[in-house]
Length: 477
Image (cartoon, rainbow, N blue to C red; front, side, top):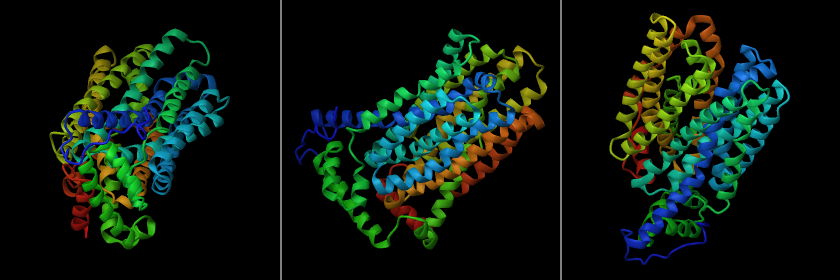
């Protein structure tokens, strides 16, 4: 369905959007969200597939612990660069065009990793995938936030988080199936990796018929085009009212020249807001969530599962992530973002503490294996049900319109670099100080994170993006 062409004009007096008009608008928003979040599905699959592919890849490519870390973390390093470049590109060229370019990168990177003959080629291919993952982590939430009505923004933006964890579940499940079917045959990890080319194709063709973000169009003073897009996803009267608010802010930001590093350095409230964004990004990563996403199979093997059982048990981590994200989407429409983030931090910190304790005091065997599995599931319930959806949602909301892609991109660089550092050093930490002490480090980080959120993170629920920008400008000035 071409959302740009198939448009039902709603009479001006229908301000609430009832009957067929409301159903048409709601359906159009669902289609836009579904297509755009294939970027999130690819994000999840490409970060999660290494979990099961790495043991087979290590054998075929002769990886050492150091090169295992490089293969895993090269994607994360690419994501850091992709986040800031993707953010700048989406601000200058548009959200839709950027997502189309990212779909091509996803396809090329996945195919390159599938066909990689050596470790060096694999690292380069994973870096290319990282560029796409980082760009998608910024551009897709911003696109959804800017096209969503205020009352549905939380639910629609966090659909991307649902697709991320669905991609990870797809990776875990397909890894287990391929391992069962392929047994010990050489190169089965290549089949695990090549699956990612399919959603990349769907994303590219789907975004060809999606509209551009109306707020990006307004930021480029293309107000007529912005109004046309708004009419397709709002009632006519509401579209006119929303454009008036957006265009007034766009004109103000044009006078202030908000848009890049120089503006950030010279504008105190933007500097403070960026530091809050950095903090939110770091908080999401130093829970250690991606140690479980990337090394979950190895953690479960160390706890007492066999290799095949660990692959199968790891599917539980993917299932709980998807279920918890559904709960998180439901909660976001009912509770404030900030207390939800803090509740998630308390839950993850307690779960990590118990993983460390069980690994330390429970004898190796089925008891410890299932205890650790239960705590990883509990950890992911709080992480994916509260921390992750709130993080990506807040980062898509808090930055000014003319630099929203850039601001979220810079914050995402911090997020991905933190992720990169943790992914790189985790195997060495486990080898050096043991699994228990490694998780105790994450517990300490969790306590500091809770204090930061309590003191510094603003509430964003229930405001239009323009109202929220005015509130944050006043708060940090």
